[in-house]
Length: 104
Image 1 (cartoon, one colour):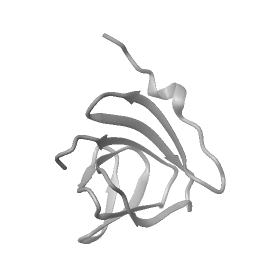
Image 2 (tube, one colour; image 1 turned 30 degrees about the vertical axis):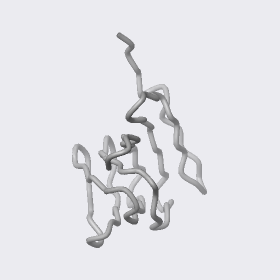
Image 3 (tube, helix red, strand yellow; image 1 turned 60 degrees about the vertical axis):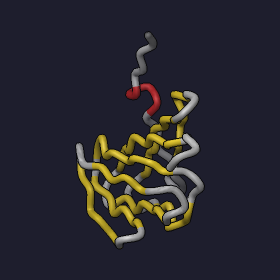
Image 4 (cartoon, one colour; image 1 turned 90 degrees about the vertical axis):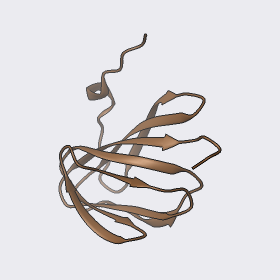
């Protein structure tokens, strides 16, 4: 068993999101994503599915169905090859778990 203290990974940059991978497994990867208020990850497609869960803050998450405001303890699942984007309305800490399996 291995434990992870995500508090040690929290770090913000004024002009860009910071993504810190901390768990790499055969079928999935987990990362902590920190965005300062006003920082955006523009909508874009990715070749993996992902579950994004807000740990702190508030943001607008974009997927194929539009825009969704998410706050602490709320999450969104986005399928492989679908667009995804994040715009931080407050300082935002997000846990991202990428599904790296062949069947997304």
